[in-house]
Length: 259
Image 1 (cartoon, helix red, strand yellow):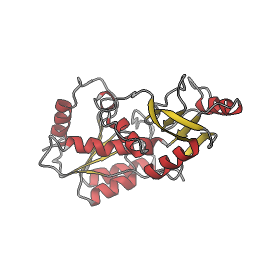
Image 2 (tube, helix red, strand yellow):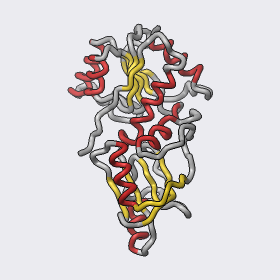
Image 3 (cartoon, rainbow, N blue to C red):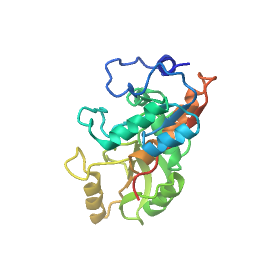
Image 4 (cartoon, rainbow, N blue to C red):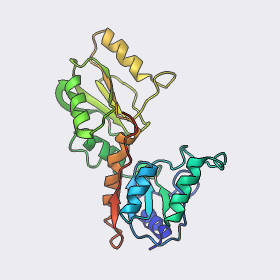
């Protein structure tokens, strides 16, 4: 099976029309007609992740995020960049090929990025969640206890929290990556990957600080982009195993960047 044939199987099974005009969900580097010895699923194509995939005998990488440090994987200004050269040389030398699946993952039902995020923060029972699962009611706890649960369950080492740890909370909104939900009426906590701290559609950090000053129970938890979407790529790989039987598929996580 070639990498191109793997993509065709994904298109056939993904459950939504494929947008051929996408700039995200394309092959990024390597030969699409290379024979696939094994598939690695990951959230981000870091060099360390590539090395671990190669060591495991996996020469096709399917990632949710970019390879060359920008959303379009635009390489026009990277010709003399040493990192670009070394990364590309490693991929080509080892007959590897990288495919991104981002936009089409987010229209899947379920959306594995959300399913994985919920599981990774210790919220159970949402195996069929879509991109915007709505307000989730959890057993009442304090914001500090919820943050401790999220840190332990996700394994994040650089969790960022805004809010009063003693505040009683029970109604949660989640969003993977940069899809940070806005606070709305009836929401106590927003859990997301990353968020603008100013000049956004809703500056959650400032909103929470003002709420705390006024004695309102609000909190925000920022996991970081990688941590928030990482688990979903393991689910995506498990989904691929339901229709790709003859090629090994393994989840190879990217490293959490922050400490």
